[in-house]
Image 1 (cartoon, rainbow, N blue to C red):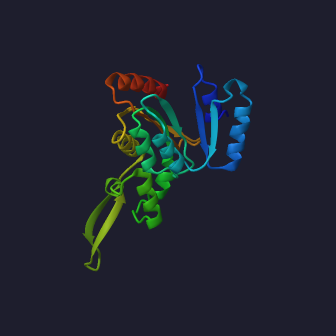
Image 2: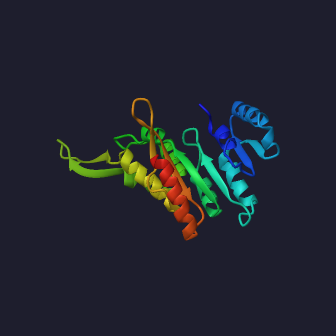
Image 3: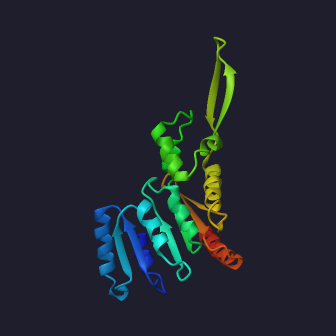
Length: 221
């Protein structure tokens, strides 16, 4: 399958600049080979080895967004990106963003009994930018056991449909708007793997309406 880097370089008309951030040295080499096979894009492609949690905010700070517009495709390996990265992108007010949320990885960390290891909870806090997700995903009920002791029963109450709404609303809290129909991407067995979302940075009403209409059409098709 053609990866996102090749697809981006095949877009017509071409972008003025391409920036690919990869933490894996092998993927950096593959990206360099892809760029080398496109002499028509010479001087436009930059490939950076590094952590997007550092590289993307630095790029956002260093760019004059009065003169620049961008499209970001954030395709994380598991749950490495932290919420502050998306806050930096949203603050540009000029970078529309396609984001693949790794919902299968998230769901595996959300144990039905609610007893989530502290390390996992911290990872989810950084990923979602809040610790309040726990109260949205779980409900607690008190009862009395056979020995007359008060016990608390914690139950997971969020499914993939609710998780889709929650993640979209988290994006809406920092971006100008979002596409209303994020798409669940399934594996061969029909289980959700990723949620593809689109967030709009430019707050101008006409820009929001146009970007939203295009993105929702793409997600529907």
